[in-house]
Length: 418
Length: 115
Image (cartoon, rainbow over all chains, first blue to last red):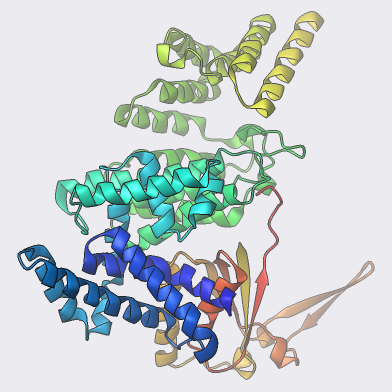
């Protein structure tokens, strides 16, 4: 019974908190009311049985408490007009269960926008989103981010306080504000995904679970706001990247580079879903945003049956577009790799050499790694070996260092042989 | 985790007549709710077993058997692939499905370790 209630809670909690946040105006109170309803369920359901419409039961119970709370607040402070208005709104909806159901979508969107409000730090947005939208416990979030539980609980408490102090309203923003707020939401979702994705050691189940959670949030968001191309873009990017989760780790836990991966181990279902999401983004028209462009690059790899069939000229063109939208030395480095593949290592090397003086890449291990790779292809083994050595000394990832040292050794062997 | 839901709808699995528009509409509404919750990865319905084949392996020998098949109760009429956080969550969703007969089997898909 307990497990069934927990499962129902996981399904309903975000919608519950969202519906309550619309009525009471702040996430903290909404979450408390939702928790109260959960406690009531834990007390009553084991003896009385699970109600047929469990979600509606939880919402009804919580809303009753919400109205009591609002009434109490109203008597305490007659002058507070805003609360008065929310009481009216709340009382209007008290008999309209159907209306509540219909508004669920907008409520969820409102909650996502609130939890990802730019007034909060990135860390706070991530923690709050996982808590109120993912239904993760503070302990689970702490474990996922490898930080103490107290850090996460403080982060969440502070985030709620910041939202209240900044008088952040529960709303689905429109117009120009929508674009900025949406990009904050997408950033949070992709950060959660990357937190799980960048952990190559798969011992802790919760880190890959972060990828799944980010994907779930993205997929939900794509249905809530289907006319936003960049949502489909970020979903496409996550689906395609997730399709390689298994293939990018070797038998002893070492990282396997994209072009060396066994493509038979890529998850075809996720690739298909990713390509479909990308199509949705493209069909909506207009220029592709940064996420959709990255997804389009990932799609080029996904479509190629073997690494040698990769459409590198198209990838170069897509990187050109990314560089125009969001120029950065890292994008330039990726573009150089693609140029090297499309038009030969000499062309790639020329671009990489232009980046060597770039201060922000000074201790970035992939710069010498890429340079080493291009030099090796040009037959300049000795220089290549030096670059791989340098890359190995710069990376903090043990597995990656081993891989780079191995490549340095290969170059040294080639140098002597040649 | 991923779970495979196999719809064993008994006699209905074999019925050549399509479901009523009302039943279809109800099913679609439920499926839409699942999609909106980010649960559905894939869904499909299957033709009756009269249009299907079986291949039996016996050592090196392969035997093709034509449908229809008799064990009506075990015949799968449709499937879902869901992404859920626990088997219990899958059960909670499944219980909400608008069906009045049949057995639905819930199986967890094995995913690679380290994933």
